[in-house]
Length: 530
Image (cartoon, rainbow, N blue to C red):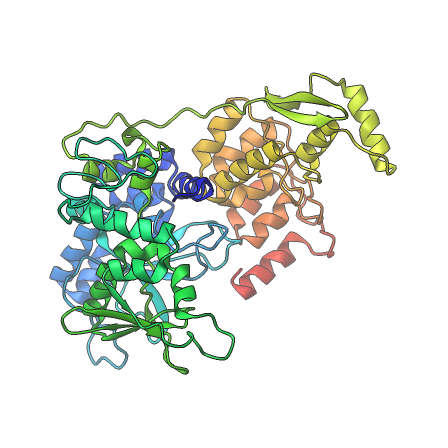
């Protein structure tokens, strides 16, 4: 977290994974005892019948599952679900959620039922809405791999465990003094201070910042067997290089490895998509090493729980205590009253673009992009000349990029575009509506020339579609590949959205550049799971 880019990425994860309107809605439903409403507000589809659970597994297990559901915080969990580098949920991944302390029965060949568990299943591909299915099952389809997340990631009552996981000791936070003052850059806990959880996290962070990866793992309680390469075949990186891929999990990694070994009765844990293995001794000692060629790669994913970064963001002034998730604030600041609220969206600030020898101001206001230094006629002339192969000025290029997605795209527009379509992709309907009502132009195009109409499957289309049509967006507007919003909804297998578009006047027989209709795209999506 020493680099600003890393901190900004963490902020994006928090903002997109659980936007403030979602947090507010989930919290209200959870505190009211409505776990189904909390799931719906957190974009979880709960396929659970507690009466069926009781009939299949007994009253005790049904009561445990119900207790887990009553404390379930899907908005917090979304911050810890496995994601790709583009922040999409890892396709088809399964995530076990259980507060059981004893081992679970999941081995194949059982003559009796296994242990019932809450299991979340992520979307089939990143072209599907980022919704999560929640079920109760006693089968994990061994020997495949799955994720298993601790209760501090998802249960409201895990307050003490959450405080530990976020790097807080009894009397202070990591990178903070006991009186709450954040450390200045380069400052650390004084030498000779008693060892505590906050100090452990600070030590690990300092070693990672210094590039001392193996020393950081050792400080976190690991023995690293770095002999040889992490080799399945010649050319694999060394053990140390592979360990660098997983440093995001390091502050909680030792506890997680021991928890998973205890839960699944394993002495060796294999890492999915990684040439490493973890040995867990009877006394809890941990060794990470290169996996032998041909080793099994199934089981729980050891490095599947990233360590929370909220306290580091507090240290750098990029978050305030009042902006923390309410459950995180409760754990880190017991006794303090949080002034949490859904923030009002900030209108896009004006920005300057290079236009010939000068810098001109461009602004977004009243649902359009404005260029005060140029008339509409001047812009049309530049667009015409550019179409004939002539140069295009900075202001005209900004307007063209906004309306079509064509390059060059000014940096400020790229940021606005990333935020707008990022909110849509992650289902932040309320955030999008607030931006539009505050003057944001909904006609901004993505890199493929699509509009928010092409993202209807990812948001609440019943709210968004009337707003977009009222703003002048066309339901049949194609992107540069000829895909209309109907094609985009079909690719996401969103049949309800397709029906709504037809009702709004969309042509169901429109074809894209490949000559395919939306119905043909839908059929292909259903065949491939995409």
